[in-house]
Length: 375
Ligand code: GLA
Image 1 (cartoon, protein in one colour):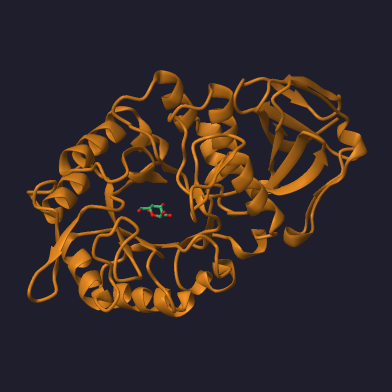
Image 2 (image 1 turned 120 degrees about the vertical axis):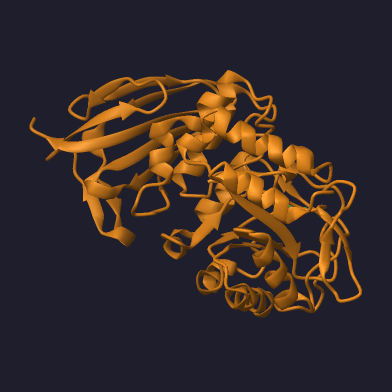
């Protein structure tokens, strides 16, 4: 859980933004809610010196990255940085190709805790080999750093990245919309539902687990979607056990955004100890149901209305046995009554009675099921 500068600020970043973001993370209660990484994305770079050492942009980061890391650590938070496996980053700054060990040593000396490693400008490179080189460089540098693989799912990283990094992107970049796609030139940006579909359909769940995560990309909560869409976006990322890396301006966010990002019940589903990614158990036109087995025999269930029209839920618990073959978990609600609590509205109920609800367009109902209780 953390924050990243790219979605909101792109290349318009400097040390003041990073310091103020760390301050805001503490002040707004995000740190207490579990967010800890403050990640600088592309465009922090200046030039390499005659010895090949990379330096930050002297105008935007005049105090240097070490001073920034000290500041962020002083708040009880961690600092992340960004590089690329090619000669240059996506933003045209120096990449790490040929400098992997030197850069990892530099990051370690600065006190970096997290490295996001991108895939622009890498013609002819093999992804598994290139990321393995950086993994080994980080290990050799002697400071633990989370290694975030960002090659957009092109070489099916889920099949090899569990041994190489801690998280790996599964799709092209997120685009700030709920149900759209933006394709300027060769690049593509995917809205929330498009990312969900790629993530859920490809049956990636078996590759994820504690310490090895399918990464749906940084969040767009607070960047302009409606409240219902933002709640649905946050719930989907939580259900799919995706890393929660915020992408909005923490210094100016509204109270409603803050509440969405700090909902303790939703975060607990995301951070559940089992680390299981939800499966889609029902697809009924625009209405879908996702189930996530949780620690202690509990479950999270999410009803998603994909449509821009309202949808009615008439869910007879007893008609559907919940089964997750992969994790050998199942519940037959004819035999067991579970209590449910709605993680957004805080309503409660149990599975002895049909669930009746109305879902607004692009919204979710997200429940935690605990049980079995005596009928
Ligand atoms: C790629 C990544 C993004 C971001 C930009 C920076 O598009 O997928 O997340 O890091 O590069 O240029």
